[in-house]
Image: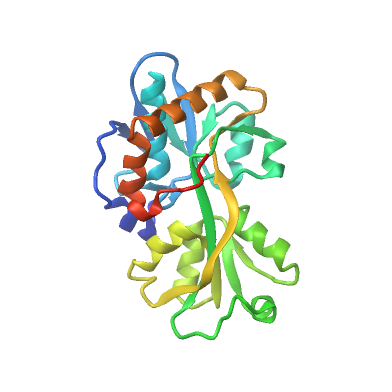
Length: 265
């Protein structure tokens, strides 16, 4: 995937000790055993992003590398566009998805999910000083709101406010760009990518409107339906990195102490 400005700001986060060998839009973690092909999006900072040199970084990438190291398995992490990520898993292009994917009933019909490795909340963003009020149904229905297509945030918006007419984008970056250039009144997004964007040059004149929207949104690893052996390996490795402190170290690296989930189990 092409590197975008929003990804650059997240890419400068400090380094972490988990090793990874990078290539163009893919990374490998080498140990022993069969190679696992893991898909991520590469445009969803700070969870996953593409560095200027084409390598992948972010919370998802560090989690995937840590799990592969714990499983003593070689892993290849590859960028895949969001809309095609589950179909690519289903056709055997990948063995797993680690891409800030929320667990939903619809997705659970196609894939099996691991235990959660993060819990997400949503927020509305708008320009500082604007009169956009997310507590008003009329305001939401009459505003031009942008969001990323096929995400929990866009689904929540259309389900909660069926008369809203959001403008949907293939990537989160493009939604942020249109909001930042004032081609939209507001945006709905996962909280952590929103906080990252607000600290960027383009986002500095914007703010969160209203409070967190807590929807008990669990983020998990996806494998193909029925692949119970691989799912068990991921769950065991996830429990191990939580127990030995690796998980906490990765969370603090990307989100700080305040980002540590309290209801991850």
